[in-house]
Amino acid sequence: MTSETDKSDSTTQGTDEGAAPVSFPEVEGKQSSQGEAPLDRVYDLTVPVTVELGRTSLSVQDVLKLAPGAVVELDHPSETPVNLYVHGKRVAKGEIVVVADFYAIRITSVGD
Image (tube, rainbow, N blue to C red; front, side):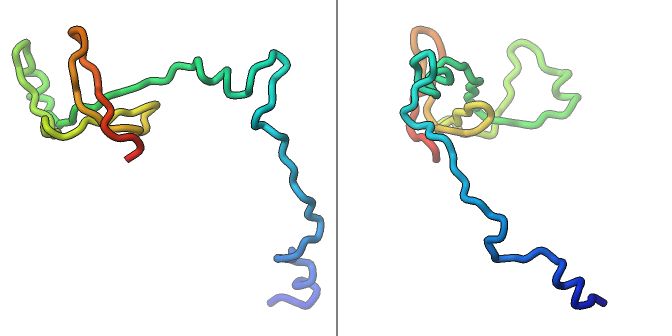
């Protein structure tokens, strides 16, 4: 059971007592001491990019049977777009193409 003094000691909700306005420093368009914008340093970072053709599950017995020439069927139909992940997050879809004997992805949609 709470008394009247207990109720008056509880924190007040919905009042501005002790609250002060918050101000944040300007970021947009500012130059650093070296003369570059804050995001310029981020542009040269490299991030992992992965293209997922499909997935499957195999029993340990089937994995042990794998040999050159074995075919592992994936759950992704060949006519559907593949997913492109940046740092583990899907950011685009596309189709597999070959460019100068290397596999590549032609982006068909971004952010879906």
